[in-house]
Image (cartoon, rainbow, N blue to C red; front, top):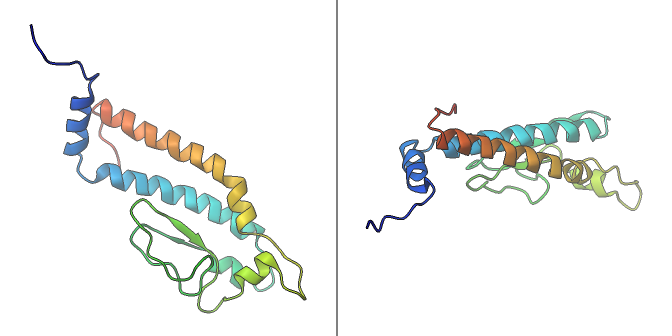
Length: 146
């Protein structure tokens, strides 16, 4: 009698995953970047027109990169592994938070957080669906494109 246990193919899957090296990580980052671009596009569309500087200041920071200085939320920050950050503002546009939340003299013109919250569930579903497809392809032994 053999004491080998049926792992449901997990050992084979892990072997294939290991053979791919960094390709799955690169695919996850690519999926996250695509989602961030879709959200940022909606945020730019929702931002007030005026000079369009605010729209142009909406930036996407990829994993390992640094957000623009003076950006909202939180200024310069290095994105971690599988972390994509969307920011508004930069060294020239330091007023994104004032537009978003308003001041004593000006009414709020929300464009950033509202749009993020509206898009979050949809993009989380897209990310999950695309990541599961990558995992299914790996499990099936298919080559994945990075």
